[in-house]
Length: 155
Image (tube, rainbow, N blue to C red; front, side, top):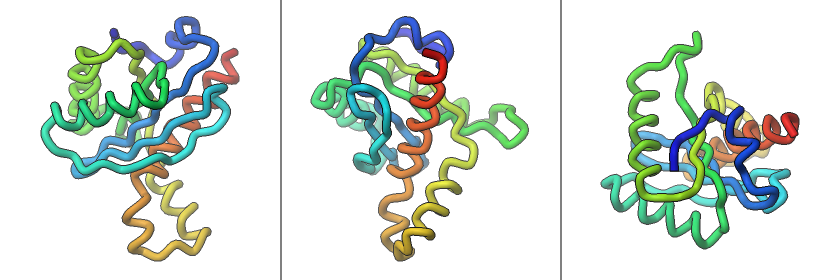
């Protein structure tokens, strides 16, 4: 399925169906999933990154089991909005994944999502060890919630 800009995906999505948010890190992938009506994003899991093929299989099994209709991948832009090497790597991951699935793939600006996730965890008095274990899936939920809110405002 081709990769589309978030503002172009609204008109092609089915009315119901879960969205999956991904926070692609160097070592892990944080995963969040929305409810069917696309109101709220829930942190789901974190997987250790390995070879792309293995990661894709794991992600696509989740897509199928959760009934996901679109994947929202956090795009790591520089603070000035420009794209650097991490953005290029993220776009390549999305391109490779799009060749293996029929669900829509789009991007959402992930600037400050990890900082927001960390602040939330500090406010919840999570230990540093626990923060390390869950930061990526919480960041994925922040990314996905931003996309959900945008799509709901557009509709």
